[in-house]
Length: 161
Image (cartoon, helix red, strand yellow):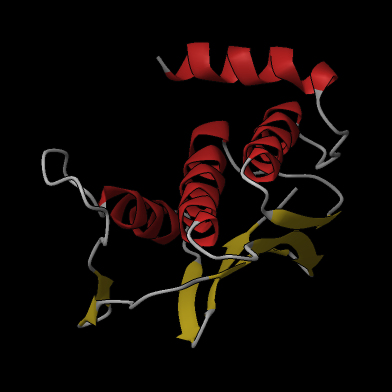
């Protein structure tokens, strides 16, 4: 299933804005998420400045995909939604930062976030748990911060060549 998803977003890369992360899969994923956000009238700023991504495809797409999906969901509920996404390199560490507008309440309990999604049929909150697990498995760090109308996630990951 993941291979089919990756294949589909790679095919769509030629149809979207050019994003160069040094990884075709990551570039395609970011371009697809940016297009999805823009289709919902969410203003996006993307900044990629890294010599390359040396993290396995499954891990990096889990992190970026889940964080971007959450940002799109939150920003889509704002009158003037926006997302800022960046990947930068500092020494041997890659920094992924995603910031977005947010309206409503953020429910946090002991460092865990409670989903505010309305449907109660499907389990929610799994994406952030998966992101935390992948970041931990990569010996990285992740920090969440928020204030009125603003949410930010910063992940620092070893990115050795």
